[in-house]
Amino acid sequence: MTLGQRFARLVTDVVVRSPGAWRLFRRVMRREFDRLAPTWESRLSDERLAPLRAALDALPEQPRRVLDLGTGTGRVARLAAERWPGADVVGVDVSPGMIEEARRLGGAAAYDVADAAALPFADGSFDLVLLNNMIPFFDELARVTAPGGRVAIAYGLGDRTPIYVPADRLRRELAGRGFTHVADFADGPGTAFLARKDAPS
Image 1 (cartoon, one colour):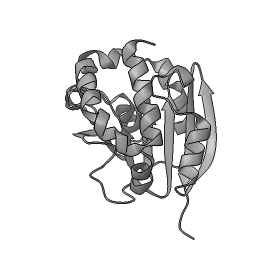
Image 2 (cartoon, helix red, strand yellow):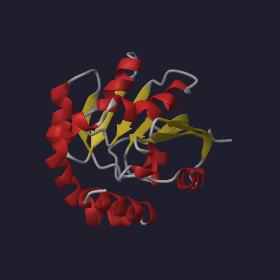
Image 3 (cartoon, rainbow, N blue to C red):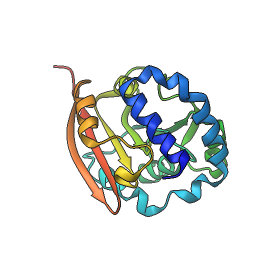
Image 4 (tube, rainbow, N blue to C red):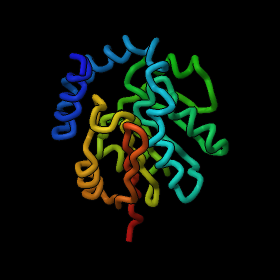
């Protein structure tokens, strides 16, 4: 890994353990992704999206409201909007530069600058939440996912992805917030994880 990639892994490890630490890293991460935004789209190959596509193929029905967290230049949000033309798809990112690029590239999704640690959406707003190479802020993730909704988390290079959380940690964190693990996927170098938010009993 490069120095920047090692720093991203460090931030991920710290923030997953202590979400409040994000406030220490938010500004530098936003600045770094603003710097990368003009070339970011070329870094995400179709091969690296394969695990996420496998998770989406496993969904039992078409979602109506989709949120792509850490959307970057909107590649995953555009994929969701193309796959489900009738769905409302929103991509958010803490980096204004990334959102500017996503809007420039177009497509049917809507894009907004937002921090995944404090999302500007009501409880239960989405029946599918997507994270591709993104730090999961588990409390907010659980809050905005509707009962019965799904969460798909993918890492395009598996455990070599700079921003990466192992599947057992994902399973444990989500289970503690009312999710049931559905399936794991591996395709090419990447992995994905699919979970369902339990409906209240």
